[in-house]
Figure (spheres, rainbow, N blue to C red):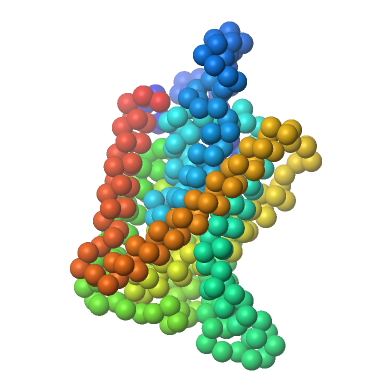
Length: 337
């Protein structure tokens, strides 16, 4: 592989087949019968190219989805790059099963995050209902602004879905976006700290929703990070660390729900086997647990470091993103994968 290395293409979030430069077709990831038999001889029914059985892969992908959705390190980049590096292909390129698995982990991610943020959700849902009934208040405006923030990403996602899937194949682009937006995340926090940015969550307004919502739309590019870019925008707008974390996570919930509904609507009518259904269940449960843990960890971290503003908690995430970007670039350019 040369510098034009591409990630495996699938029709859903994780793609099947490998673009081989110089060849007119994409070779199948399915193992040949002889190789498959040799692989089984080492114990159990396992996919060739995977070091773990399918239920473990489903759990690992669910954990990865839930955790990286709320850590500012890009869930899309990890869900493209990790299976690519590990050689995982959970459903042998079956796009309907891949979409169904995506629905399961989206539902799990949404459930875990909503459980942690249930007090905020109840507060703003009640305020929005009171506003509909003619008793608007400050929380009503915040709730409406949170809903408005999802519009830019939803419009861009539907309009450019095919093009975005093409971009998701490019490991070097993912590496650049990981590094660049990681640096912006750290830089925005440092700049906000120097300005003494201390806006609370209750100061969130329509202009903030538009600014952070437009930023959130860029996270449709793999490697950007939805939570990372909304936190970046929020810090530039002057919100304190604890406030911007909760706002970023609340803003993400409509989009996670929408992505799950959209993928569910595009599912075919083929019924999964009991084994495949089990993979959906364990993947979804793993995503629920890890998303709850991810939100809890980020809220705790930013609340704690908010009391010690001289230290940027995002330096660690930026450093990790730079290291991952370098690894992806080296592997892609060298042809190791």
